[in-house]
Length: 128
Image (cartoon, rainbow, N blue to C red; front, side):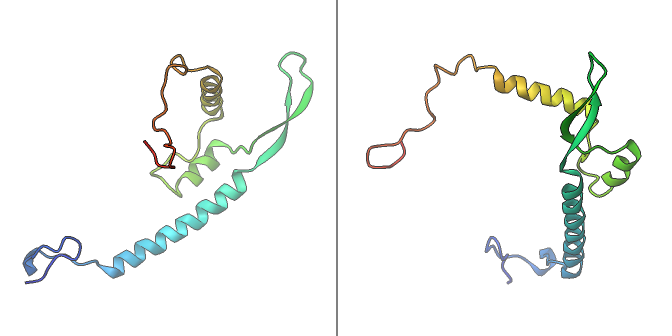
């Protein structure tokens, strides 16, 4: 009686499964292709650029460092690389999320002074 390679439990041949190596290698090849494309995408669009934008009050142009931006049609086309994930976010949504993140980092935790460490180090170097 054959045994399961992972669990060691005896199984009948009718209940046994094997890895379809052909399909597994095809999936691996596709993933490598996706990885390559995603790495190029991050290298190209993950950089920061100097962008000239008008000042809200004066209207004068000033330069600031900002993420590279693409239009909706380009974002939609490039999202096909990995449809399971939202690779692109609207700038207004990103700005709101960024503001929330910054606020949460600035705001001190209310119970920060009363919290005990999750673990402590013993004199002999062990963890309690």
